[in-house]
Each structure stands twice: as C-alpha cells, then as structure tokens.
Image (cartoon, rainbow, N blue to C red; front, top):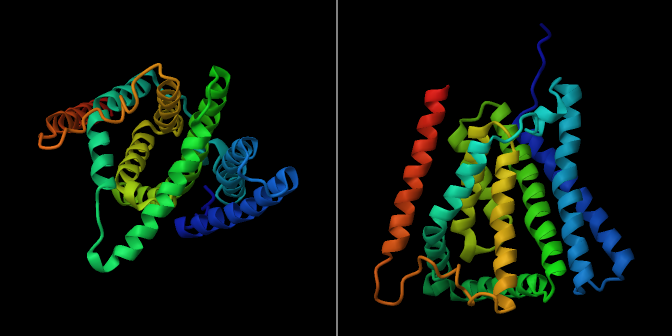
Amino acid sequence: MENVKQMSWFVKFLLLAAFAMMMLIVVALVTLVAFGGRYTSMNAQLTMIALQNLLIFMAPVVILALICRYTEKRPVVQTLWMNKAPTFKSIALIVLVYIVALPAMNYIVEWNQGLHLPHELRGLEDMLREMEDSAQGVTSDLLTTKTWGGMIVRFLLVGVLTGLGEEMFFRAGMLGSMHFSKVQRHVAVWVVALIFSGIHLQFFGFVPRLLLGAWFGYVMLWSGEVWTPIIAHSLNNGLVVVFTFLANNHYIEDNLIETLGVPEKGQQPLLAVGSALATMVVVWLFMRKKKIEK
C-alpha cells in the first residue's frame, strides 16, 4: 500500500488562515463595489454575513479538502467530515442539552459580563467594554425587524448559514486537521475552542463562547461528522434570532429567556447549579452509551 505523507496540522492551519485572508480581501472588494463603502445599511450587513460565511469560512476549508484529496489521498467529504449523516439520537442529544443547559449558560454569561480587570488595567477594561458595546449595538440593529419575513431571513443567515460556516472552518477545518494529525483529542478540542472564542474579540463573552466551542468540538468527535455540531450551532444562533424578534415585537417579555437561571440580587443560583449538574449527567449518559455501543 502506498505510504502517503500527511501534512501537519500547523501547515493546514496556516493554509486556512492564508485562504481566509485572501477571501477577506475579496469580500472587502465586492462590498466596496456593491455598496460604495456604505457598510452600515441593512442590506450591506446581511450581504456581508452571507459572503463572510461562504467565502471566508467555507471556501478555505473546501480548498484545503481539495488539496488533501491530492496530497493525502483522502476523499473531500472525509476531510470535510460530511461523509456521515447525523443520527436522530445525536440531534435529540443536542436539543436536550440546549434545553437543560440554558439556565447554567445564562448564569455563566452574566458572570463573565460582570468580570473586572485589576485597577491598573482600568483603561484596557473600558476600551474592551466600549468595543463590545459597539459590537452588541451592531448585532442588535441587525436582528431588529418587524416582519416575519425579515426574521426568517435573519434566521437563515445569522442562524443556519453562520452555524454552517463557522463549524466547517473551526471544527471540520481546524479540529479535523488536528484529529487527522493524531493530536490528543481533548487538547485539540480546547485549542480550537480557544481560537474560536478568541477570534470573536469579546473578552466579556469569552468563557461561554469557549464552552460552546468545546461542546461543538466534542459533539463532532463523538458523532464522527460535522452535521450535528452545525445543527447545534445553528440552533443556538437561530433561537437568539427568534427570541429577539418575539421580544422586540412584544410577543414575549424582554429578556425572558436570557434571565432564566440568573438569580436576583442576594439569591443563590440554585437553578443554574441544578442545570449544570443535569447537563453533566445527560452528557455522561450519552458518552457511556457510545462506549457501550463501541
């Protein structure tokens, strides 16, 4: 049998970064021509989200998979982790975990937002909070719509397409590269999760995004395909779009979902603790069942 030399995961990371930077330039040129530098319009922002996911996140991974097809003799769908369909059990797991873990995740989000840097770094903290407030304002404007049609468009772009693009890049591309290079799986999952969270440049949302990235990574390795973490990521993003729309248009109370698990001042986070314990039990049962099946 022919001995095929594998590219190292580091080389693949460099290739992904290089392709992403090239595509970033393409996206900038396309939007400049299409919108003449008026990037704040809603059409421009929605278009940029689509191009970002299609070109900056998805295209580099497809190019890398094509390179691996010729250099490592690995089928493209295998490099993309798309050679298996998600099972009903895997989908049921991510839905169950999302529901069970929601109070705990809300509490972690609240805790992370309340962190403060040492007094000596007060200027840095103010700058970071200003950046995050600005980013949050852009996101809030993007998700604001009064029509169901507008909500569906945002659900498809911010929810489904972003889930697809980011999971292809970070999980299939980065985590997959480390996995094929025989990097210890826990190290690979958390390294990619750190990159995933860090690249969003939101210090006061770093921890919950880190945990989400790790969860998506473990789901991919457990399921053996990228479709299940894509569904999990799309579910997470998509429900934010839906709940924001419902709250903004007074179908539900503001922050009804976001405050679930966050205790009132002076109260103990009992619901969040119970949520965290229940989540660990659900994940443990799933892992145990997978081991028994193997």
